Image 1 (cartoon, rainbow, N blue to C red):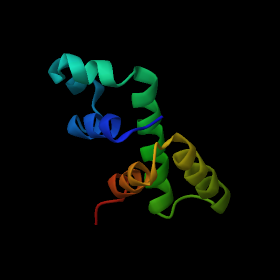
Image 2: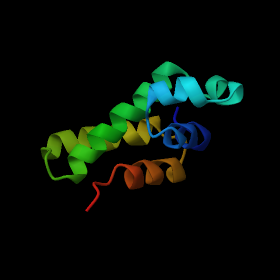
Image 3: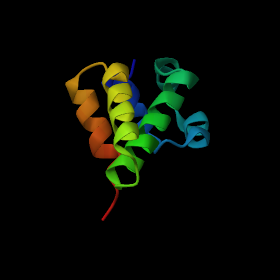
Image 4: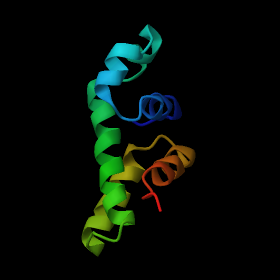
Length: 88
């Protein structure tokens, strides 16, 4: 389950696992497991594809459903959508 704290840690290290391994505190390392990190990464990449208008309607529906199921609450879900927006 993606929580606010897990997403905060992921964002702090910009999704960079090497940076996370080198610079995280013990409590940060204990707060998120590799599979959770990977789940956040996969959802953000998929949402980026959707928000870049490069995805089919079926893929978009699948990604949105995965984000809903994986998110602890509406605030986490909204943050996932914000973080994944393409830079203009």
